Amino acid sequence: METAPFILDVGEADFDRQVVERSHEVPVVVDFWAPWCGPCRSLAPLLERVVAEQGGAVVLARVNVDEAPSVAARYDARSIPLVLAFRNGKPVAEFLGAQPELVVRRFVEALLPTEADRLAAEAEALRERGHLRAAEERFRQALEADPMHGGALLGLARILAEDEAGVSEALALLERVPASAPELKEAERLAAELRMRAGGGGDLEALRRAAAERPDDLRRKLELGRALAAAGRHPEALETLLEVVERDPGYEDGAARRAMLDVFEVLGPEHELSREYRRRLADALYR
Image 1 (tube, rainbow, N blue to C red):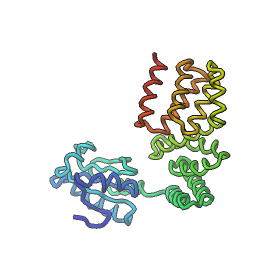
Image 2: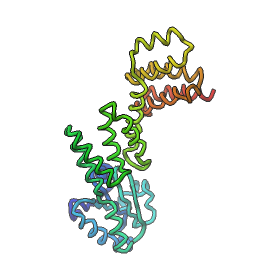
Image 3: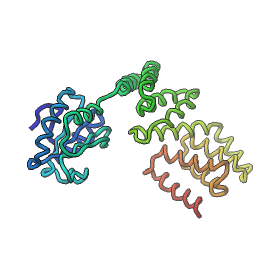
Image 4: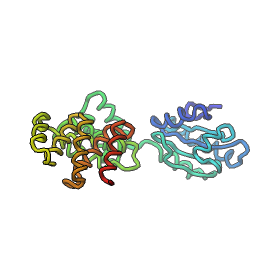
């Protein structure tokens, strides 16, 4: 029985919607329990009270392991009560067994949005409305509060990347996104796109003619491959860059290989070109 909009019972049918998906909007605390579990009965009212005090800033989802065995198995809830905290679709913290109020309170409060979270959210809303100058200022304020805030690093990099003069700073910001941040994959994709843009450019037809005139010149092949990648001509870019790798894998410290990896990052790992040319790249490197 639901006691508040932010305290609810969740089962197998709605776990992904109410917990995994919802945690992209608000932190969700999941209490794995069972009616026969004494410690569960002592923890539940304390957990509900602490969550209720947050006024909806945190959601509590109660999962009866007897009624949702596949969810319990997915999160290895063999001993209960098990409490998991979800943010951005993933578990980020947990505790096992009935805990004193101070521990429960610190656990829940650690999930609340920080000042950097608030500033980054304001900045993203401004960016989406096209107020880039104000958004940049808010993102920089967020990074003053938390220099490793993934959302602020990515958001500011997106704004800076709109101007060629800001690409270098954007790349430096993207390199700082923590490996644990949910923004990491998008940061890696944007960084690859910016490297492609910075390494390309030029008249494609002129570059093609130059490469054709001196087919043994790897420098011209590499320049053509980079320019094709920057122009979004991915199949031709990958074929051209692969030719450089096949002829000299270490040319310019593996520049052609790195350029291919950036194309894979932009396309995504499941794209048919990524799958085909990853295989062909591996064949060229390890034949």
